[in-house]
Image (cartoon, rainbow, N blue to C red; front, side):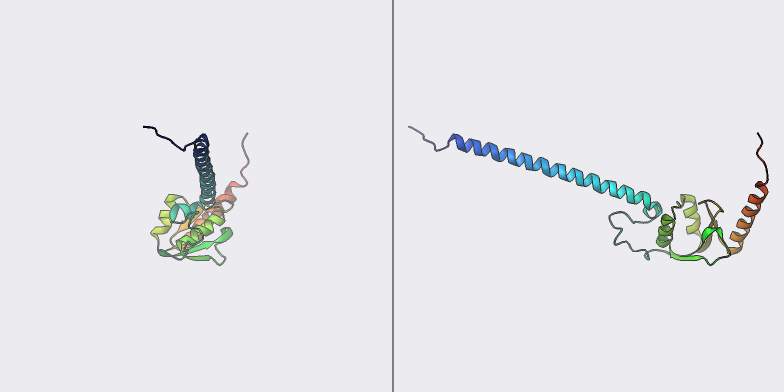
Length: 165
């Protein structure tokens, strides 16, 4: 019995080329996916650093930043006095996400204890300490005004004291 075949060397060469092409395409696809993944991770990290409060205290992230609803969630009433001026008209925030966004734009990070303090009040009054980004959080306007007055007096008392060498 004789078996004849029409398989030639050219068929084996074509099969080898097909396998090489598939391996190359798989490798290129994986490299592209890895580059894109690194870029997404880098952008997400940059966004989370620039929006530290939103990222930490809400469900906002780089991936849902365009569809994030700032008016969703628990209502609040936060009076924020800019430039440490408690005699000015305050900015009023009725949702925490809007307040966090404002703090992010001002490059002020709200520590966890301060956030818990703000969330424990139904209404609060906030300002920065004069000349810094540290927040003063009070339950009432009168308490905030008193704290600011004490800080201003302390600064006036310490200013004329010369340094001892």
